[in-house]
Figure 1 (cartoon, rainbow, N blue to C red):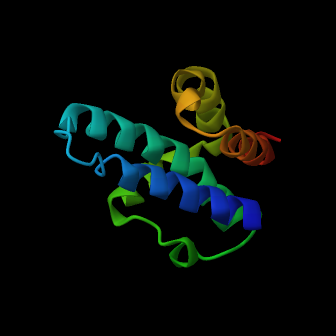
Figure 2: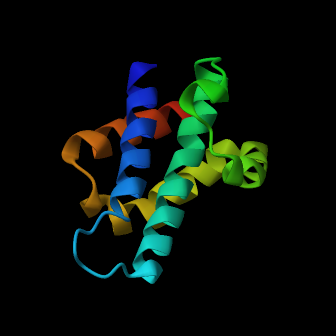
Figure 3: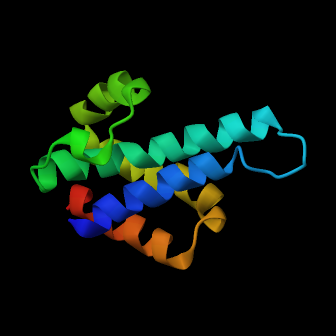
Amino acid sequence: MTAVKETISDLKSQKKKCFLVGNQKIDFNVVQKTCREIDILLLPLYYAWEHVYNQNLSDVDFEKHLKKPYVIFSVRPKTTTLKILLLLFPGISQNFSQTTRKELISIYELIIN
């Protein structure tokens, strides 16, 4: 359960880091793409938090802009999680630490199994 909460926190931190580029100009196309990818990765984690661990989404500061996508995700969580693993994860996984990748995979496996 702690791993899910920590992974959610790590992903949210990654989103915030997109906007912190020091003196460089922010490329909003990159920021938007990265934030969308992280939001997609968050959906199964929110689902695991709520349905596998029976916790309240407010405990992990559920982002209101994900409410509608979360409802759609919840209709078929196993199928959608598998699609995320197969289609999206390999393309962006290099942006995360080895620990974060392992945590994501283990949490997603909980949902699929």
